[in-house]
Image 1 (tube, rainbow over the protein chains, first blue to last red):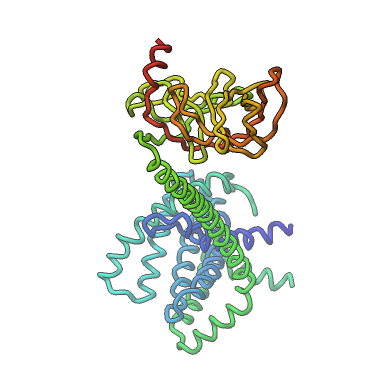
Image 2 (cartoon, helix red, strand yellow):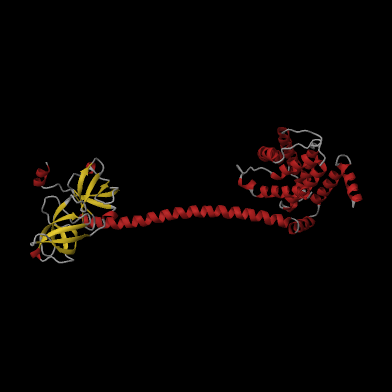
Length: 163
Length: 274
């Protein structure tokens, strides 16, 4: 019972720790994976849109706190959107294989970044440039890391289970 | 309590979580659109309350990793510096030895070839060692080998790029020596597997502490190379001779560099060796 309550906060803490430490160590050409997005996608797929959006809000806010104060709220908006929309593919109602989960992660990463760039208020040209140079390689890297996480951490499928 | 939970669940299930989503989105937009002062206040209170423990853990991990990698780097640097220091010290020692060698070389009429000791015989008793000079460098058998302190031995076998040196402490090596003060001449050899011993006439008056040099007789070693000092004197089987224990001026096992005098044996020795 207690485990059910603490496992997601614990997982979130692990994701934040990994994002601020491991992600820094494994960067290639200044491109690193985003463990927070992996966490949100995992949660949303497991627990649906409500929990996804809630954790998206909390995680996004946590990122915003450490981002420039003028942009406060941008991560929160993008992560809420990510959590809610990925949550529509909740595992209780849908069966997603590993490839599809990774695909959802990649797509979610793109959507999240687009929403973030819009929320921050970047120009269209800058957004396009960032999508190509930043979002695309980072989403690929995140998909690789996310694939490993999906494979080993959340191998089970929750279809027909009441959690 | 149950009613509140049920109410929240009902709200959450509206439109498959749409209500919660809209609420959170509006809240996020409100934060985004808030005044800079409010934003600052939100960030400050968040950092000082809920994010502090997480921040502490993250900082500790990052700090640990940073220190660990820095420690690793310092260890590597330390090892490199130790090697450099060792090389510098060795270089200074070698320089000092080479200075002495140069001074030594100037005192002889024959060309000198410097050589490094590259191998020793693996047995318990050191009787020979190998140097890194050979025929290619003009070395021949029976050439005398010296160190800065005195006589070492002679070349016993020579190859193209290396040679074997027969040391004074080889029982098969005998040489003619002279006591420096009295000019008495005797024969030096290695006896009992332990000591260098010289047979010198009793009436010469050689005492303990006198120095022995090469006599120049025998045709191999030039005259005047220091060999050792008389450490003890014993009676011999012959009344007219004294057995003198000789302490060489150097420890053969510690030799690193030697030099070979390019002096060929006198013709009579060459004839005898044929």
